[in-house]
Amino acid sequence: MNDNKLPLRKCVACGQMLPKDQLFRVAIVDGKVQLDISLKAQSRGAWVCKNEKCILLAEKKSPLTEHLKHLFQKR
Image 1 (tube, rainbow, N blue to C red):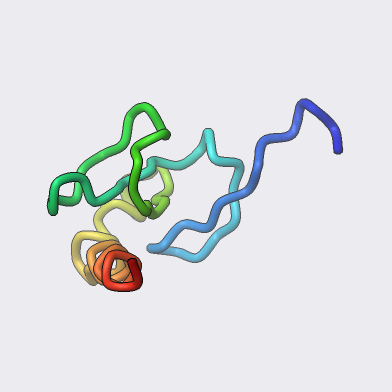
Image 2: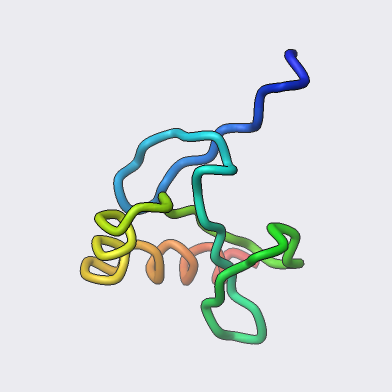
């Protein structure tokens, strides 16, 4: 594997696979959905594209919240 390549992650809003530096990571921390700036929060997380369209879609249709709730219930 080439060391210059970043791992791919899937946006929960649009479903597109992108390098993780092009996405925001959100996680459930202390029972609340929060932006994970460090990308290392000790919890399950979801990824959203860094564009307004995907962020608004995630808020409007709530796939992000539903995705995180599903992951949180699996624990």
